[in-house]
Image (tube, rainbow, N blue to C red; front, side, top):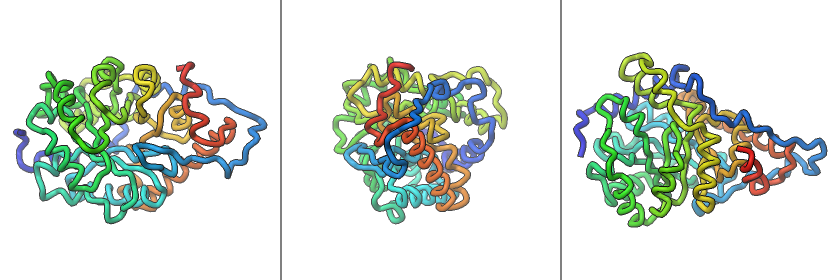
Amino acid sequence: MTNTPPGGIQARKLRHIEACLRPESQYADVTTGLERLSWPYRALPEINLEDVELNTPFLGRRLRAPLLIGAMTGGAERGAGINRNLATAAQRLGLGMMLGSQRVMLERPEVAASFQVRDVAPGILLVGNLGAAQFTLGYGVAEAQRAVSLVGADALAIHVNPLQEALQAGGDTRWSGVVARLAEVVPALPFPVLLKEVGHGLDVTTIRAVAEVGFAAFDVAGAGGTSWARVEQLVRYGAVLTPDLCEVGIPTARALADARRAVPGVPLIASGGIRTGLDAARALALGAQVVAVARPLLAPALESAEAVEAWLTRFLDELRVALFVGGFARVEAVRGQLAETA
């Protein structure tokens, strides 16, 4: 199923954490495109700030705000602390959380504890995570069900990341037949399944290719935030050797707008460079159901659950203010308002 050497995945997970904290891990020239969208302003909004409602339905659950903590890590002791701090904050704020790739816990059961968060977050929407490439290398329904059941998740994200894999030492570069394999596996699973990129953007051709597979949502994970191509080169060489190649990707705003037109009835997650509450408001106005944030939470998660909660609270306060001054009393009122401008 894999030729990864013992301990190889765990060691790489630790190096990923270190690389993601470096400024060189971020896109240098490409931006999300969200900053170019003008936000509406009403001098007389005719609503009260405290009455702005952020509650949002997603995957059959109701979140207290349209926000997921994005996939980050797992598989090492340091990752366990990060995940538990993230999950604790999510529980306190009523948010959702996506785990990092669980391949390591399926292949090295001794590290499974680093993904266990249900004891500190029994009520959150929890999303498991596996790589799409693994489903052409032996994974199937059984592995997907194990990934979800072992952590008590409510759903599973399947991530696609060909550029990251191509630049990773020993990465999975055989992607022929992935769509057909997903069409076999996804309908057989008894829980919602999401398709997500990792930060280089879901393109419209891919979305159309899997539109009938049965995915419950798409996470566009656009370019403009963390470049996992850059991360892999930092891990592999200690420097970014091919900066132009590492800038390849679809900016988040464009990926989101294209996906909304391609699959108008499917919920979308906006991630990739979401850094502020105003970014989130603009993404919702482009048609996202929820947004996901990862890298800005990494440093707080290394500190404490309280630091994560403080960062998220500021983010949500800014989102609420953005909706308030735009004259939107609830998330449903803003969704899709900028769809024609992207």
